[in-house]
Image 1 (spheres, rainbow, N blue to C red):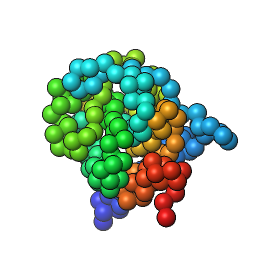
Image 2: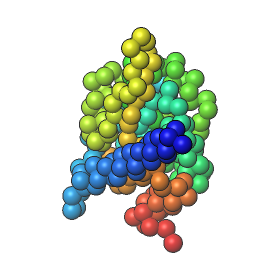
Image 3: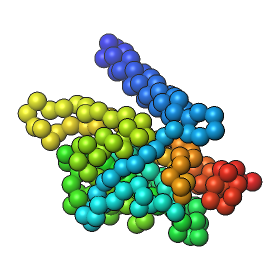
Image 4: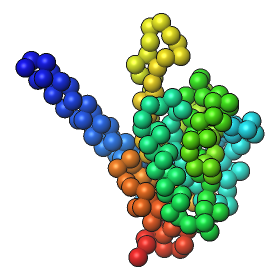
Length: 207
């Protein structure tokens, strides 16, 4: 019975941690928004999985959906990227042609260009995968107030660790201005509706 009680307490603590983590993520993003203009975003330089250097300016003129994660993420990232794929299917072909979707690695040490290419095969074909040096990743994550930190590090293997990170999608306008954020609790249908609302002139509102 003591083992059952211990397991129940541990499960409760994990659930509490996840709920509290998401609440803090939402607060971090909301704190960056002031009346009039949001303050998230800024200049950045990264490298696409095909080896091409890119900057934020390369994506101007189209809307942008950003997600930060890492390829060795055991469950959250794959789940969120599948949701991104569902979202992209729901926005419609015409809107999709005017939308850049980017996966930005927060694990530049292990997410090589080749690793990103392999990882990309499992998800929506229009998603681009970006990485860079630690300084490059630090710049873009600072611009969007993305939280990430190494966790569960192995004492014997430097490559064996997880990365605890924000699970937020960022939607950015053609001029580079931050428009919306979506936490992991928001379903694909609601995300696509918001995106369509912006892209079709409704400011995020869809009837």
